[in-house]
Image (cartoon, rainbow, N blue to C red; front, side, top):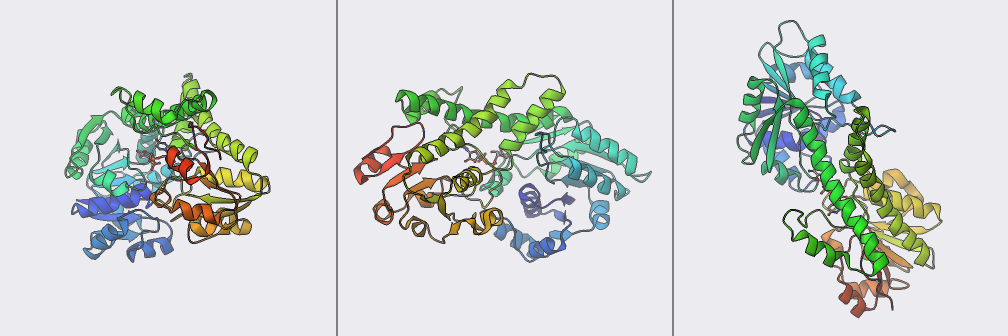
Length: 433
Ligand code: UDX
């Protein structure tokens, strides 16, 4: 099959590589020639485990074509996927301007044969109908098309695995021809194929992300109870999670969720709810608790660090990615800088991105231990494996005082006690010397 993918962010590039790997010819349309040139040369631009290899392999096989040109790509494709960003506006609503602009470009360049225009970007209910209206308005007279919603559920850091081995493929459309083509292109993926109407497919993505965000906020809420009552959040959640109706996964408390999806999608679902007159208190609480989780850690740091020098380990919003969008680190660093702290920061992959925000306001180091020289405290914000496996005796020797704030609960309480740390984690007893 010949496919076009408009956009080459996490969803676009990973989908392009996977569909090319299945043997399809995939045009990837972008608007920045410099980025497209890098992609042509096998540089994925973003850090995502395994992506470089699959990109290079399919570039070499000639199955990936990076271009700014809608004419050649769209006119030859049976399926055109829209995978551009839908960032949050000030009021939380999803900004659809790029999606709708792209729909117009696609419309103008549709070929003579039937084309499916399928939106993979996360878009509020009703957006695919808007895309359909735009295409009807802007297309050449003879062009035949149908719209479909095909949301993407990949996680950053395991994006390739999640796409190759997706649990489910959701296809929403009113056109059987579109459904058949999308089923065909997804055939190599063994996960369950769910065919729905447009609105249900659109809502499935927001529901998935909001339920996951709710589980995390619930875990954080319970961690606040644990901190006040002396209970241990891990024991509580381990026991609760054994109930198969609940499950333990995605219930790790800490400094809250970040990234380009949960924060924006919860806010966008609130915004859609308001539009339809639905009571959105539950979703608003999910969002507020997520902010409270950051504030909770921040208050502990401010109350307990006596000096002004702090080391921060972990900048990316989660491990195995260089993405710092809506990362807890950004909020916490900003707040600590405002309070006059001097910060040494380290992350395996997120350094360049954090430098773009904070410039020379931070001290950047290239090794986790180098951040610790003479600091009054260490704050851990991302659960990279590297931090789980450090030599804690060495950590203790380098610091001015052995004080760790752990926003991800990565160390065992008993071990920290035996090693002689003041150790403040989330929803668990404080270890103090
Ligand atoms: C998420 C969804 O998982 C994915 O299905 C969707 O397509 C896009 O949004 P992603 O944002 O890549 O993926 O990351 P995810 O692994 O879901 O983690 C999101 C955030 O939640 C991270 O900041 C992570 O640290 C945090 N998290 C996750 C917790 O705080 N606790 C948990 O138990 C799990």
